[in-house]
Length: 293
Image (cartoon, rainbow, N blue to C red; front, side, top):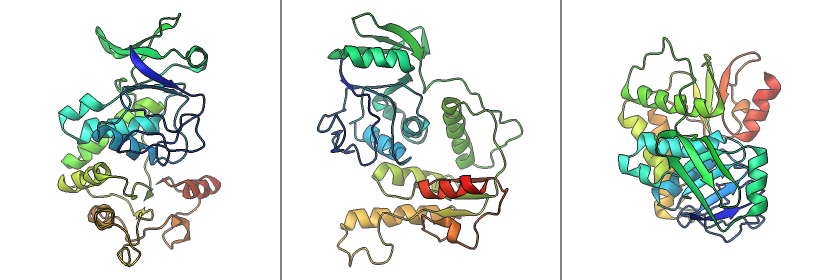
């Protein structure tokens, strides 16, 4: 049995949890000031920014992640941070990756209402694709391990041309299995949201793709950085943070992304036309995409 934290309110990992301590810092959340590190965290899912995947990655690398994440609904964003930790980082990183599973509305409600101080969440010894959950008060179920789902994505005819492409494809396949995606579609344009420097893990992630010879294959714009690229020193930004934040942007430029750094790519001359298939991150950019599709 492991100590457990429960909430029926979704938790934003970016801005809601301090990545170096595991403490919940969201003032509005019922778990405020609780530490999720090495606990079983029972929540409906994440909320807020997709940058929560980067926060999950940093928690794992800092050894401050939860022992297990029991969700009401499968959350591909939170799982992405765990998948990246397993695919991009040394094998011993897996020791800190939490078990992640989704139990559905009925079981989730029962777990939250009973709120036992400890909860047993373990990988089934006979099948690593299954997770066994027991609370000692009537809940004893087996659910799927979201990090060990079979591949659902049809990648026939896709042949990676570099180690970077092979690594990216493996990662996409695993995330697709969590979200239930079954096919890839061609795109003409991309906008990358993950340009904010959250910690060294995010920087190492993109630098790894550069080291392996990665290059974008369609016109790709970048979201704004977490610091002004030219004037961060004059603005009093910490030297380490400013240097690393620029290093993230530099790495994306080495992948062939456009020198853009904006959260409003729809204002650029390169904005896509109606009917084009695109891949955009960033919340307000996604709204534009949906309105134009």
